[in-house]
Amino acid sequence: MKRAEIIQRLAGTRYDHGYMTTHALRYERSLEAIGRHVPPNSSILDVGWPTIFTDLLTNLGHAVFNAAWDIRDTWPREDRTVPVVLLMQVVEHLKDPATSAFDAFTYEGLTGALNEVKRVLKPGGIVFISTPNLSSAESLKRLISGGSPMRYNPHVREYAASEIEWWVQNAGLKVIEVTTASCYEDTDPAILDAIGKLGGKITCRDDTTFLFATTP
Image (tube, rainbow, N blue to C red; front, side, top):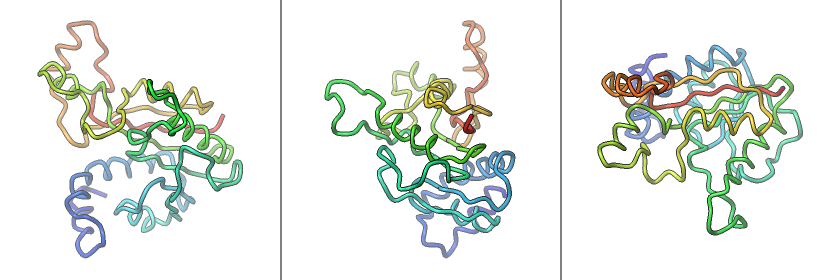
């Protein structure tokens, strides 16, 4: 489903039209990615509030449920019972719990959520994570221009694609695919050229990380 059709479907819905329009291209590309890895008519736990994406998945035949609890703590799901978990634009919002050390970011919120994903996923189950890519060409462009590399400064923490891959593996999940997609900004070829001339990696430099993982 293309961005224009997603925007058209927003008409008359309960969702914030401005917000959903901003994210429509990410929804389009997420649907394409999910179609490669998630079986038809799956039961999906979509972490976060309902969005137009929830409706799109439902219209495709999936049974979609939204999480309404603090995902850093124990989830109200039995071990190895959930076929698919979506963490779409979620991990960048996860603070450490209040019990964490006050003088450092310890990643306890992120690791708590990923540990629960591993616990509740069925054998062979799938988790899909989308999140801003802190190592994107546009993030580097903002940084060398004197700005913050984060795409959206109120986020708790944004992660490089390789960084979120490491944390997922550290939680004991098996990464199937890590890619990046331009969902908000076109990737500047001049920045890619400069990265390459400095000997840097030029792949996975788009603004949004897409990661699929499964239970080992």
